[in-house]
Image 1 (cartoon, rainbow, N blue to C red):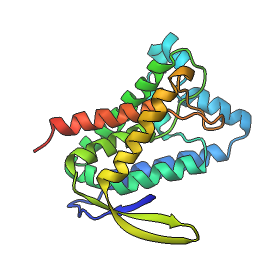
Image 2: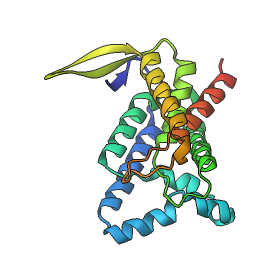
Image 3: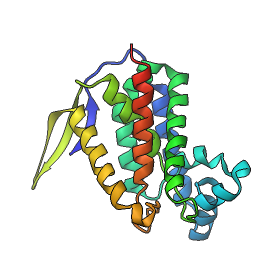
Image 4: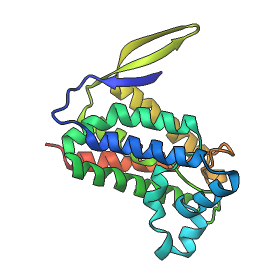
Length: 219
């Protein structure tokens, strides 16, 4: 099951959603141009390293934002950008361009702090747009609970599309991350795409922040 687009018309062109997608793609293309040593140094500078954030907050806090534009692989990037493409446009339409950007970056930063809290002494880089996009999903659930999403599904050798309530797609996302998040507490849920870890608590943190924000700003 993979979302393709929603059916809610927007009043404005979601320039910032397009811009965020473009920036993520450009940064990733820069990443793949680097050698392994250069990439490691790049992540050390711009990803969240929990141990460094714990010991040197004054110089490391900016990584709460820069890490949101880093990805550890093509699938990591593509899956995040598809969700941003599908759900971000209506949130930007609801908030307006600048407020949407502030909301997106704030969700991402607070999501990263949730993950940091779980493993404050970890040396594994935490990176990706997942926390910010989770905030978008949380807000979408509150503001568009009856929306339907055109979704790509795979039935063996057959591929087709169906209209699925957004509640189902977002609900599955949240439940999967909730179960995985509690299961991963014993290993501190550190994120490293290469080592197989996933920042479940960043996903959950961003999702809850987005829901709270949207609940407070309902019309």
